[in-house]
Image: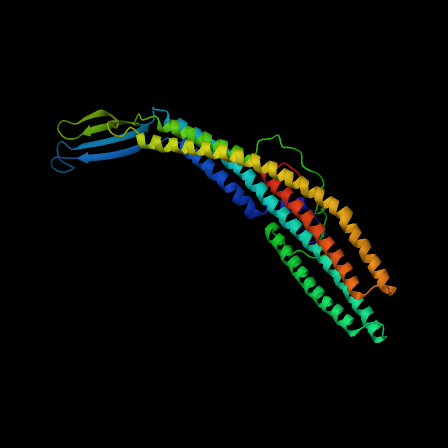
Length: 385
């Protein structure tokens, strides 16, 4: 992220994570590997050149022969074509898998982003609570000095102030860890506390139902396609033919030159590729079963996550509108009543704690809703996150 930037959105974090050079290299390497395998599958075997020279009385004697031949192995069964199509399916699978992994990486960046949002909001609550308790301690101390409060009241508030200080330290540590966790993923220097995170913790809307094919399913479908092409290749047990042509030259009294032609083929008497076909059939069965199981699992998980997200969003909004506003009003009443000498300091502490707990509960509900949205987005990369 540029040093001058002072704001960061969740989309920015996801983009920085997926655009990081190491991440790009990691995502593109499997595609490059699959393309290399396709290039290999398209190539004919290299021809084999051989040179022979023999003589009855040494290489310079009468009757010496020189033989030069070139042999080429050819596939007449169609296996090379099937293997090439299998390699093409592997490229499709690699590309869909890269899309899935890029989406997962982007979701992880967003997850760390909103972890930091939640940590900063919890830190703000801890700071406010610490300031309120410290002010209450100062007021109680002044009252004790004026004879209007007992020493026990002062010490009770002091204990709460110490607890608030520890809670503040823990919240600061959480923010520190969250900032560095996010910075490590998006490839920036440690984030400054002055960088404004622009996205709200609670998702704005429930994402619409997806109508597109999931990249994870498309990946498995391409793997099934590749396995089927390789099984079909293994079903062809006709062996490759090796054709050779060359020249034979005889030296000496009866010097002559002639052409050579050879044809060789393994006889499929024992091994007719039964084992290879059986293994490739097992690959097909495995790939098809994995596809069906994944489709069922994702259908169930997506429905469950949508229900969880909807429930948590409604709960967070309802709690914020009800309990949080009530706790805030209770805090204001308690502080006003304490200043008027109408209630004891313990009741004020109870009201302040209730407000803090309501704030933290609201943050937790929002954060849980966001986690559900991110989990759904990991399965449905095109949804809002």
